[in-house]
Image 1 (tube, rainbow, N blue to C red):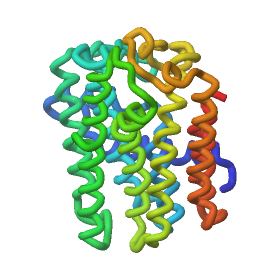
Image 2 (spheres, helix red, strand yellow):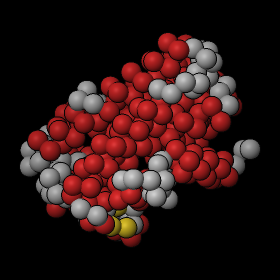
Image 3 (tube, rainbow, N blue to C red):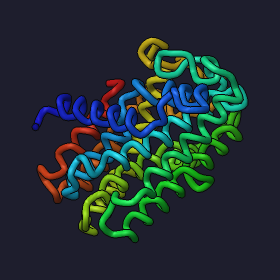
Image 4 (tube, rainbow, N blue to C red):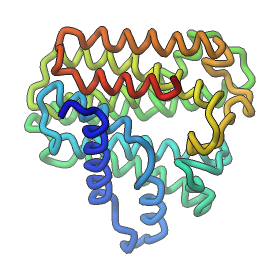
Length: 296
C-alpha cells in the first residue's frame, strides 16, 4: 500500500480499536473515572506517535498486530500528558481536540486521577506477557518508555517549560526543553515500534533513533508555527495560547520565516538517516513529510 493517507487511516483505525479494547469499560467501577479516561483518549488526534511506532516496526519487520499494544501504550502516555497539561495549575486550557478538556468536562480531581490511571495503564500493557519473544527486549521497552515519560523526559521538559514563562531563552535552551517535553516521547514511540520486531537490526535502530530525534524537534517547531498562525478551530485547542502566556517559542526566538527554515532542515536531516534503507523506510519518510508540512 503506497498511499500514505490510506495507510495512516488504517493505522489510526487500528489504534482506535486497540485503545477501545484495552481501556476499562465505562460501566466498570469506578464508572466516572473510566468514563473520563475514555473521554480523554478515544476519537481524538492524529495518532502521530502510533503512526511512528507502526512505521518503525515496518522498517524492522514487525507485524502490525504485534505493534498494537506498544503503539497504544505511547498514546496513553501522550493522552495523560495532555490531560495534566490542560489543568489550571499547568497550561490552563479549556479546549482539547475540539472539545472541552478533561478538567472542564469533569473536574480537576477527576482529571488528575485520569492522568495517573492512564500512565499506569500504559506500563501495565507494555509489561504484559507476549509482546516480545525476548524478555530482555521487552524490559528495555518498559525502561525506554519510563525514561521518556519521567523527569529526564516529558515531565522534566514540562517543568522546564513552566519555569521558562517570561524568560528570554536562546535557541539551544529552547531545544533542550523540547528534546525532553515533546521529543522524548516521539523518540520512544519510534523505538518501541522497532523493538516489536523479534531481532531489530542495530543499524536500523540507530537510524530510527537519529530520525526520531530530528522529527521530534521538527514536530515542536511546526506546533509553534501553527500556534502563531492557525485558528482555534483548526488546532482543536486555544490558538495563540503560548504568546498570551508569554512563553518562549521557536517563532518568538527565530521569527516565522526562520522557524519554517528550521523545520525544513530538521526534516531533511531526519530523511538523511533513512537513506540507506531505501523503500523499506517509506512510511517513516512519508510520516516525516506529514509532520513537517502541516503548516506549509
